[in-house]
Image (tube, rainbow, N blue to C red; front, side, top):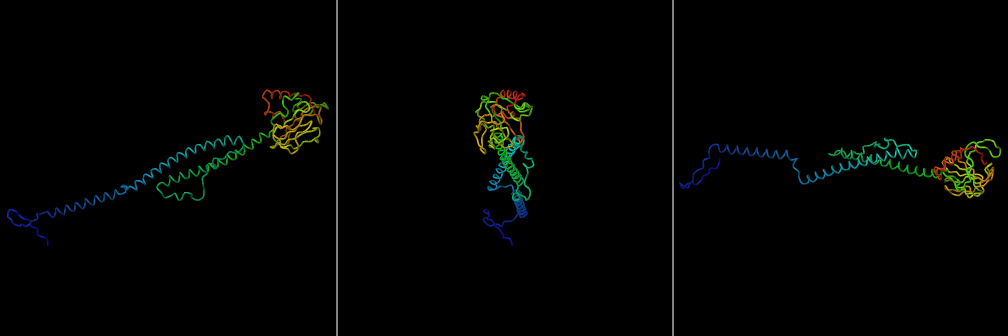
Length: 325
């Protein structure tokens, strides 16, 4: 039973019963219903837009993620630059350094090979930016491997360069008697008249005419393999083993300045001009061997002759005169 409500009427000085108007209850009901619907709609809007509402922590995480993406982008740009520089070094390595030192070029497949076997990037999967992180990690791993390959190649080139330096020092590349000490270049490599038999025969070296006692110098780095007079016709002579298949011989010496087994450098004084053995006059008979075969010594004087001096010597060496031994 609903409560009966009264109000005080000042005109009649009495309490009068409050009569509810028709439809008021319905209006209240309708208003309540509309309020509930509006409240539900507002709650619904809030619910569907809740993912777009960011808390301060979410904003901070979002900024951090954006910064990481920027850093990955910068890292990729730096890797692009590093890959370009490394590609240029690899190109010079294959087409310049390794060609010069007669080494086989490194195949591109070996330089850019990836990593087979197990999945190295499994722990990086399952994140929003997994593809970015995995691709960057793969590029970094390949770049690291390329650097290792290139580093080993440069180590090999350095070793070859050191060996090449030793080879260049070992080649008999200077004239064994100084130009100012020469009386003349008596005979060259080729067919010459024998001074004793007067027959035409092959002369396997070069004869440098100088006074007895003129210094004779090693034409390249090496080890003295002989310093004796037991070889037929050569008299007192010296052989130097330069390595790499090269040998040089210095014959008809007056005396030695080295002994067997001694290591010498290019330009070291090894003996003195004489006329021992099968010799007609004081001179140095000089020969060069490569892999056991005698070769023309005139091709090895680039170390201490000017182009003009070399041209003059070449002209004289070609004359078919009489040898001195």
